[in-house]
Length: 436
Image (cartoon, rainbow, N blue to C red; front, side, top):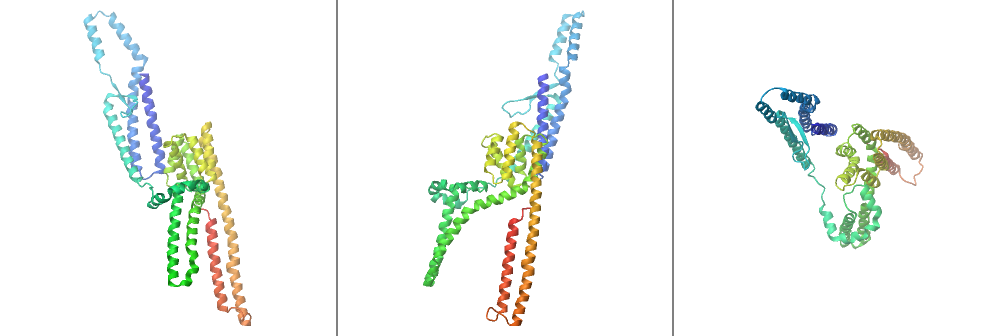
């Protein structure tokens, strides 16, 4: 009976862990709230049924009942009752039905773990178990429908591979930096495919430029001077393909830096519930609040679940390929912490404080920079144009500069210069501005 009680307690522990995981998932996935409530209700009911069997198990296991049974047997032997009556009593005791029954905790599992329940609760427990399975199946169907949108190979990529894959694979070793940028920028193409696409796009751009130039030459032969257009288009397309992954990696780096302090605080809060570390990355990756860090977290879980690496190795692999140095530092630190058995919550809390301080300093730095830009803007684009226009008016009244440009031309140039300078200022501020 001790083994039966132990199995029941292990099953209760498993149910409590499942309930805790569901409660944590509820914090990030509000769309499936009804599913989580139904699951918690069903698991709580199973827990109650298991608890009901505990008194009976303890009664059967109790030494008091054994001593009482022994006492009754000794009393019967001492009594002068006929042997026939003793035999009947013994037979009745043997066929007396037990109040408990053993069932498999998971009937579909290959290795069955048996639990003990009160007989009257057996049907209720099985019904609750089937209800739980039904809920999980419906949830899985909804999840599959949501994730049915899978990134597939585009027709342009397929066409490019069809014509240039052999050539592209031969030149891949010469583009090691591009390969790194593709991985860091999370561009969903192999290097050979990406190079094939660049070649095909370049040929299309050159062809369009050539046709356009040929049309101009046919219209007027003097337009042959525009013969550089096809080569310029070809160069622009190839430059765009070459620098696009680096640009994506840089953009991702900035966005990860903005999300990192808050994601680390979230991870520290989850780690406080003593949840299995891999599930922390699953919860963050499924959250819509951390789109860029979520992508990096998905890489970690993919290496664990699909490629079979342990969590420490997966963290080190992703840290070596991520575009953000702070995130790489966090992953490396987590790998060391997990392998040495350190307190994960304390580590994440300290890291979140550091990242939050860096975030605040970055914001203060931007505020100071914006103040400097404001001073420069007032000096160059407000005060200077007013002084310049007054000077033009005085020169025009005094009759100076008559051999040069007219007043209207000077005013037009001034307005054009102010407009261009404003555009440059906007571009610089936008580039320096941290993401929200």
